[in-house]
Image 1: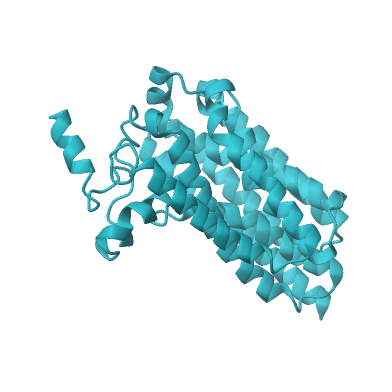
Image 2: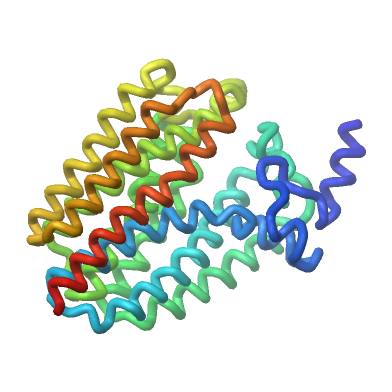
Length: 318
């Protein structure tokens, strides 16, 4: 039976266990499906979560500069960059985790462990995505280009963290929150205290939502020795989320105050905080499907904050 499943896995039309019924499975050409799955275009939530701090910082910096003329283009470029670089990062993650993914029920049907693509093909695809990201990055000033390139070190080491520390979510936070610095690098050509505090707030947010996500695999992770904050916090996850989500709201609030944000931004932050609070109340860590829904809902939380920041920026520039 295991051999038959392996044989099925080499078929490009074979679906990934935790992502079915999406446009990749139904509309994409068969030859492209494994690559689209490698880059997670069948489940773009991670790209949205990577994008949110980019948009937050772009809007906050635009408001501080009282100039939003370049903001529409920046928003579009950040959108493209987030999706292709998240794809490159996920491809790298799957390359480094291919042997571990083979041992986890939720991930063993992914393109690499199931044999839909080879490691060399995945590496070539990762490079192609990274080059597209570089083209996007080169549209910005020199300081922003160097700032963006600096994030690659964190991206490179992240997949190995789950093997050596109980806090891989912190390293993910360092990578996924990098956009909180990029908006200031693009707008001002520098990174100031406001940007750093916003970055810290975003990191706390990532630790919280990725802890929820990691509870889906907690049992399998325990069997194969993978570390995570979900396993570390265990029955105390709700208390940990109160700490990290609360810290996120406070730090982002400090960034807003430092950036002289007006009332629309504060309303956005209040909506963001209410959304995070509802996640904590609803969370049942023994329900993987609920954990996934709550994790995905963080895109909406991020968009609420962005809407407030964008409105504030437009008002200040008027």
